[in-house]
Length: 272
Image (cartoon, rainbow, N blue to C red; front, side, top):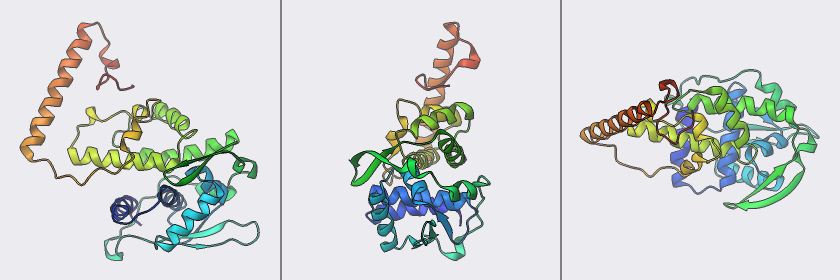
């Protein structure tokens, strides 16, 4: 599978086919696990792991999975006894247009197969968000650390500006305490596509740590952008010139105030 093409195709497909928040979250999570396990035709994923990464309760997970099966996006075979279920992703691309997808991360099969201790799946609180049942869990720090590190590489691979990885990872860990992996990935994909569509220069793309900061900038990009017409060449040139001029003005003011050029960040409210 071609990961990025599948993500783009799914985004377009969702705009024409009504899916719940939980179904979208589960699809993104399964795609990530499949990518990290080497794009196997079939792969296993414990319910507890899927609940941890999607933020869904067991009931919400069952409902989201059934929805994806009925909509033709996945195949599923229930595991025997205490074994994890087996999944198969159904491509949205024609076989002719598929190309080999780069595998990001290694050794994830072990993390996935181990799953999460049953204690971590105990439901403490429940709430409703967008029709999906969400929950907060009591998790074991070491298990969280392994999962956070693996799925962070997925975020890092598609974010349009890769700077300050250590700080970004710290913010990533903070966000996953209250947000779901699929929610963060959806916002990241939407932001990356917007930057590409607008031709945003790297200096004007948010730092990853800013995108994931406590100000919750990522929430501005949870909804897929409207299908917009591509900027005309003259409009794009005028916008880029304006942005360049504004940045130069901000930099000159920073230096006039005695600031260190290495500490300069633009836009001004961005985090280094």
